[in-house]
Length: 219
Image 1 (spheres, helix red, strand yellow):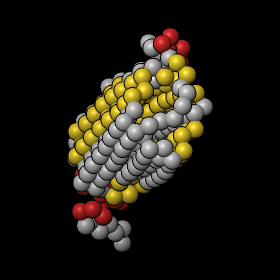
Image 2: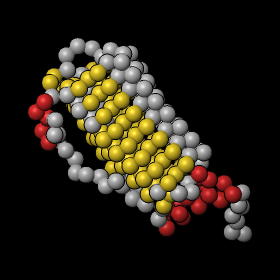
Image 3: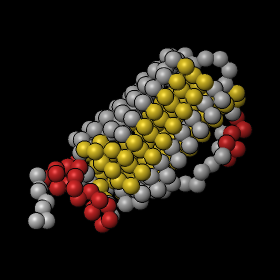
């Protein structure tokens, strides 16, 4: 998947149909063609909800539980998700720009054709997630846990991985060559199926040597 050019709100194909969101998020609710502009959602019980052809601008998800919700053709810009439970959610044809995900539970989620651009991920749990055709553009991924995840056709152009974990993950056509930094805390043995550059190989040499039990000495 190639990262298409970023779109502003007016460029969305459903922009002319967007209506301001008024009210509260409810569990198992359906939210279609809505604009969440500056909306602050605190401790919301929004599990099993559907968000379709909607836009989030400068919105904040503070804590809250959205387990098994679905984000279908959703546009997010400068959105903050802090301490939010998004476990087992489904993301399809969605793009997120300048977002912050901190202490977010996204384990068991399914993402397909999703673009994250200039986003910051800090201590995010993506264990057992299934990601296909996902692109991280100019993102920071710090202490992100991909343990047991299934990752297919992922790219990281301009992104920094810092202390990422890939324990027992399954990688297929994962291209890490465009990442500006590749810091892996654990799970180097699960990197089969990934492509890295020669320079990155040298950077990873110490953790790869540790993984195979290789002692390196110069004297």
